Amino acid sequence: MKSSKNELAYFILTLLFVGLFAGIYILFGRQHHITPTQTTTPVVTRQASDQDVNQNIEKAVHQAEANPSNDSIFAAQEALKQLENGEEKQAFQARLDAVSTELTNETTATTAVETAEASLNSNDATTAQNAINQLKNEGKKNDLQNRLNTVLNTINGGAASQAATPAPAN
View 1 (cartoon, rainbow, N blue to C red):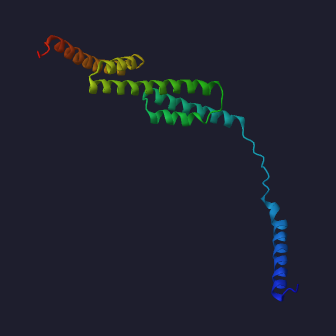
View 2 (view 1 turned 180 degrees about the vertical axis):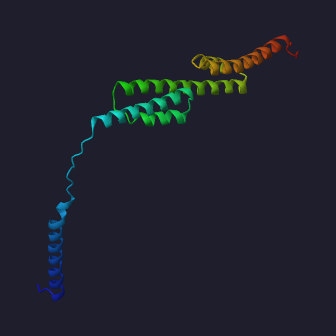
View 3 (view 1 turned 90 degrees about the vertical axis):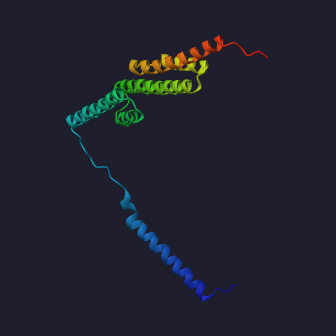
């Protein structure tokens, strides 16, 4: 087969470009190796930094305990990520878990009381009572118990009036 002059020209140009790119790679391709620099951090600075991190975590956890909300728990959890695994982190995590559990129980109890208020059903009132019994926050517990007592009085008053009213004769 006879090759044309254009094919030969393209072949030569291809070889030149491959050679050019190989040369550029050989010259500049090895400059991307990063050599680690030696940095020495004074131990005193690290200890001070660890103390600052612990203080920030303590503040965040205390804020979550004093003012339990999803935002405060999330902020404390984010602060806790800075601490390495160990006894301190486990202690902070246990405190956060307790706050999170109580917040979940409060939300569940509030929802149960609202359901009992809306339905005026004794089964819903029993569910709400069980949820209230799980709470540790006495203020919230008393508030929800008072609301539930109102519902129970309404349910029991309705049941007593229904019992006192004779059934219609057919």
